[in-house]
Length: 248
Image (cartoon, rainbow, N blue to C red; front, side, top):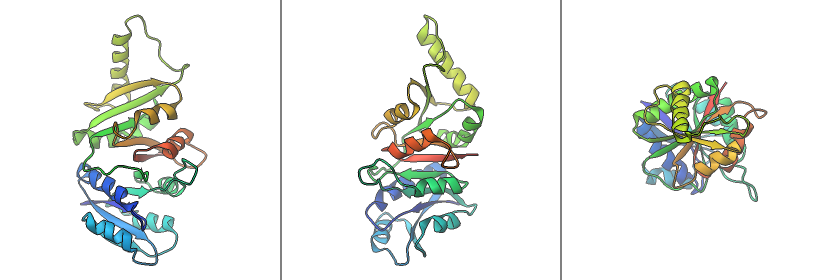
């Protein structure tokens, strides 16, 4: 069976990370394992994992990045879930999650510290740019969530220059455009619903994927700090867990 590895620290912030990992487990048909990188046992991390019935392991070391990358490189690891602390007076989630996503060829879920506990996933929001390469990178994610009978919302944001022109039959043509968009970029998407927005992509996606209306937000992650400015803005501001899918 495949594994979901949840990287947790030695604080109560481990609980939302493990909550998200456990909610993802039945969707992926995977087991959950908690790991803590430190040179000591990590009493709080161990207690949280034990209270949630999750297997716990300490990875020795003082630098979490190489320890997590080395441990999760195996083929049976389907997903890595990592917590992120917001910096004081900043919305930045820090660098570790982005570094893991940049260097690991597996999906990574970043869990903000304010994430509410969840028993199961219900609604997934997928942010999609209208390019074939980026759409293909999210096809596997969509296939998995569709098979799990989740509520799937695909959001695509146009700016004023790229928005398509519609005639006076706006409702009909908007629906036709949505159907064509999903058929072209996400064939076989089944029950997915498309939300068309106009404006700043990061703002519109964050506004749609809010706690209470979305359990998790999935988006493509272009590797390298000089790429993916919109994705990095979304990651820094999201109040729901973000599933990062690597785009080469």
